[in-house]
Image 1 (spheres, rainbow, N blue to C red):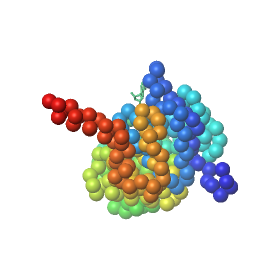
Image 2: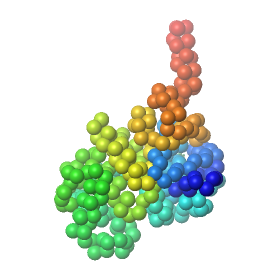
Image 3: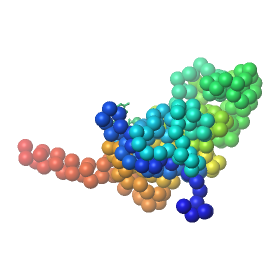
Image 4: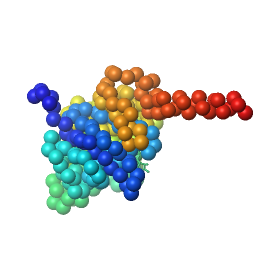
Length: 267
Ligand SMILES: Nc1ncnc2c1ncn2[C@@H]1O[C@H](COP(=O)(O)OP(=O)(O)OP(=O)(O)O)[C@@H](O)[C@H]1O
Ligand SMILES: [Mg+2]
């Protein structure tokens, strides 16, 4: 590596993961740089969630190494990964609609006793920090920490979860299908959010089935198929059409379609 290159926030080196004989991921290497949006793509069962689980300390690789800031690291738990700045942004904020914005912020602090400023569950403080965090992400509509999460839009809830992760020191955010449940406008606001986060030097690993979303925010792309790298490329190297075709299986899909047409013709 030349001296002007950045050290990846996280890197997988020749990692494999198998579950009782099922090879979920084979010999995968990937590196995510600070301020980079890394899109992880692939059809169902391709191995995306398994990669995410290895990156976030939920599963350990069967073989291979994980490096954080260039150092070989064995995550012992998701909390361990979190302490190193690797945060998964879950959409669980949406399942607690009757919780206030401030309390939702505190919720993130609870697993670690005595962590940060919320030792005494100081709601006023949490409220101020949450609102400031949202504002930094471009969400200005929320001005009262006692507002219920259920009254926020899907995009605003994502922003709340991201603000929370950033406040607790995240340097890499893992977003698993953040736009899956959202409409066009809300998806656009989440994509904008990803732009904002990246401009702050935070790295993002984005999983999505939507090639347009990936294409619009991604800097680096990795398409998995059956646990192996089908394609790996950088922003600008492929068109949306090419990404769609690769995500759908490319050659394989074409031959399946031809096969189907041939058998239909023979009926
Ligand atoms: N805990 C497990 N035990 C056994 N097999 C597993 C386990 N987790 C994943 N697998 C297998 O590993 C392969 C990859 O699964 P994974 O969940 O990583 O795919 P994915 O790309 O996230 O798919 P999807 O888009 O459907 O979420 C699949 O064949 C799956 O059945
Ligand atoms: Mg998955």
